[in-house]
Image (cartoon, rainbow, N blue to C red; front, side, top):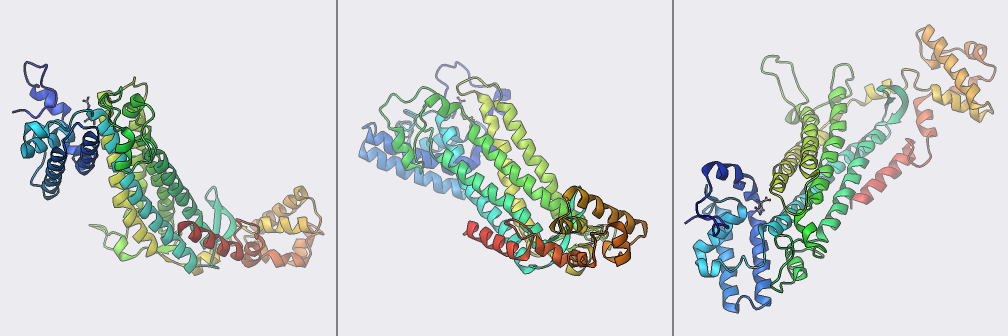
Length: 460
Ligand code: ARG
């Protein structure tokens, strides 16, 4: 006997070509535990409406439990004739309970409201897992920041030396976007939890007096879909999830790119732990930042998943269309990608060695204290426009003599402008420069310590 759920009006079975195209069990089988949870909730709501006797409910729930064990152990798995996860599991139930009882469960539900619900259940679990992994990465960045409080480094804009900053400040600048990603996940979760589609039926709702709110509560949702067409046809929750995962990928890729640069001979800012770097099959000396490169590459992949999903949804008429089956592979891939990437990436960050002397010595180079001269002049009463000119002249003179700003003599400074008294030397140090940026959010040590505490509080 065929396991198709829709044979009645067809004289012949599906062609093998159709079966091959239509089959989704090779990717939707991971939803089996969620489908079974949905079936339990559905059995209970059927019995509450008097459509199942108490004995039938008990037998059905026992059958679902037995099937769940067999799914978990691998004793039960999809066959080539099973179109999708729902078809396979109904076959499993009928095999265990007989067609009379096993066939009762389908009353008042459709694969359309089932799949829309299962997708939410699956993604909610994995949003929680990805949240934990992102939190661990934020904690690793915070630990490195704490370990290196007080260490200066060159701050850059346009990849050029700009102003000295604290290494901790820079590391925390990578942590905050990830904290916002955690907020995005939490916000997504609230929206998704609020609308269980179970009970939407194929599109028009259920006629059997089943209460969608009861099923919703049973499955851990805070409410049910206000519109059965929307409940079965919308996948914005998938696209939004794919966006958050793409954003996490992009945020991680920005850290990755810096690690790759910092790990070069030219930068020499960091050394990667042996356990988190790779060698070359021909060049014995090589120690490559593969984790960071894979992170950079996989960001493109998760962006592609989001883009593909949006293209699938664009201009799709209401309600359910089979196109929607294409929502799964991209978003499952984004889940799998982050769940394998983040632990490795966090390990790489946690074990990174920073070359603090090199960072400190490079911090003021490239005339990175020019802004400090200009701002010192402003505090002396010089208009900023003129102060900017004077400081720029200092850079020009120093550059012409191939030396740094602090190498200019008192006479050279005075010749550039009478405002430049020897007192300006107070700000011509990395410590002075960094310490002066002490407003909220600035790189002064007191503010960075405060910021670190703020970040830790957000995590706990
Ligand atoms: N496998 C389908 C999907 O993922 C389930 C819903 C099928 N519904 C249908 N009417 N063919 O979207």
